[in-house]
Amino acid sequence: MIIRSGGCLCGKVTYSVRDAPLRIGLCHCVDCRKESGSSFVTFGIWPRNAFESSGEVRFFRGRGFCPDCGSRVFNESEGDEVEIRVGSLDMAPSDLEPTYEIWVKRRENWLRALPIDQHEQDRG
Ligand SMILES: [Zn+2]
Ligand SMILES: [Zn+2]
Image (cartoon, rainbow, N blue to C red; front, side):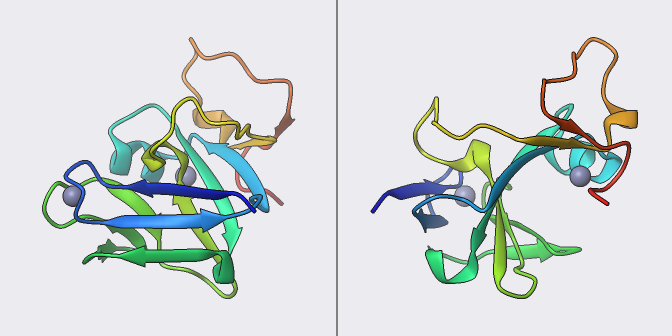
């Protein structure tokens, strides 16, 4: 069993995910750019029952963040999945690699497409 731990910058929000993710992706959409202040985000999807968290999290349009330091950590789960921000995991580099990119029509011109599935917008 593999347990990966993560959390926010100030440490008040912590979480863990167990075993392998269902999938890892990159998103270049406008909302992900705005929420992260970065050019894209790397996200990981785990089964809900493989996820635990502690500490107060606030949500804006389903995107969870630490109310003290503002770090994005994970999203409100939809159904039986939870989405975490791979950059909020404690260990770097991780052994997690994306297998698809979405919203590539918003990708910065200086970024090259990875040799993985490409989607103009959301994964169909
Ligand atoms: Zn924090
Ligand atoms: Zn996005």
